[in-house]
Image (cartoon, rainbow, N blue to C red; front, side, top):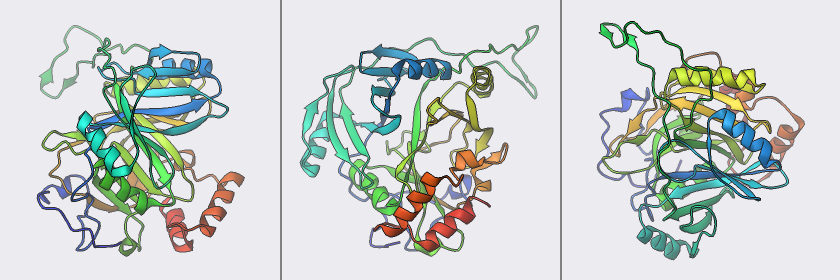
Length: 381
């Protein structure tokens, strides 16, 4: 890993043991840019393409989304918290991820981004409105930065269940009966992407959008070659934000891995999962609690096999926490829960995966036999 990116002043090293067993070694990637073009405030929404919007809406409602708007060519999904729609599903020939949209802190940031990148600010002429700068990251994902979209009012929440814990007894003469219903989505949390151009893509998000790294993962015996996964958050100064808004990992494919949506609590995750199972949907992995991010998780496949996650109780970090460093492994993905499945890890050796591996090995990127062997070992540790 190049060490010509000077470590910016300010971040504390006092809390590394709270989220990782290692801190950075001298000369390793600092996990943030000294002078980013802008600092985005949050992940606004994700865009997908689906051939059957009616089927997409059925799953969306079963998963816990509310429908904010529907047109002949698009479906706009939202959570209960106030804000913009958090998922846009567009009519298309295939089922695929199109790209993320990040929210700028102000209109001036859009203008600054436009000047720096040569991409103009334009009006969004669809539901929600606002202005947008359309970019592409080094992996080829379209990335939108938006401002001024309509902020939708809050919807009724799925209240957390009162718990009797130790000496705290908040519930008497009353039973617990969580309803068997969809786990009501509150908001979009994060998206995870795979790329064979990991370092270049990582630096682009830090330099251009001002994101900062919460945790790095590296391959066993290859730490000197730099990280192979990064959990990345927005930088809102002293305001705590999600442990990661974007996560990326090195791999032979360029594509979407999963996206995550916050729900109320563990009962919402479990009862909502039972509701999905009874309707024939397939769980990919869960229920458990992650290490990086600490959130409770449950992963599902939609009818087109795209992976989505219910989560609750995520870590919140402010700008002062420096990145943690830990080895990458399947067993290191969770503190408790069932072992990570091959379906979740994307480790099933399909013909399509083999073609992607061969193509990646022949291309100009970060995938070479050593990296590929290290990734395979990590998925079996």
